[in-house]
Length: 153
Image 1 (cartoon, rainbow, N blue to C red):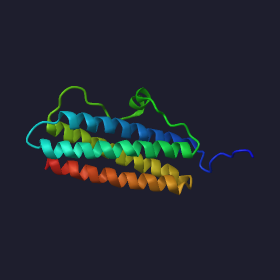
Image 2 (cartoon, one colour):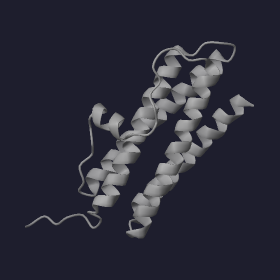
Image 3 (cartoon, rainbow, N blue to C red):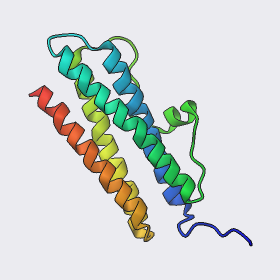
Image 4 (cartoon, rainbow, N blue to C red):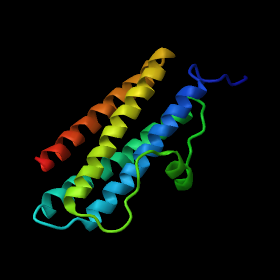
């Protein structure tokens, strides 16, 4: 019996999901970097928050990449490819705790917008499962943004 392409074998959805994976991957490493290197009076809460973020994002990368594969697409799996594609910048060298929080907040906001755009592409194609995944992930990133914003006062 011949295999058929998944119902949503749509390269624009695959591309948008790959963008989301790339942004999530860079944000994961950013959070892990900050988890390792945060100092200052808010060390404890920020150390814990950055860990929650990178642990969540690591699982999300897999969920998003597996969705690409379920749709018949190719999931970009190289760090070089993800860094090239992502708009979230890496942090090199030391940063102050406030700078870390701001960079992580900016990353969460990029993720919300990337997921919103990806969800819209999926919705326009009638792919409600991908749209739902994007909505759920967007809500997680909005909550992390709220937590980070609260640290900035």
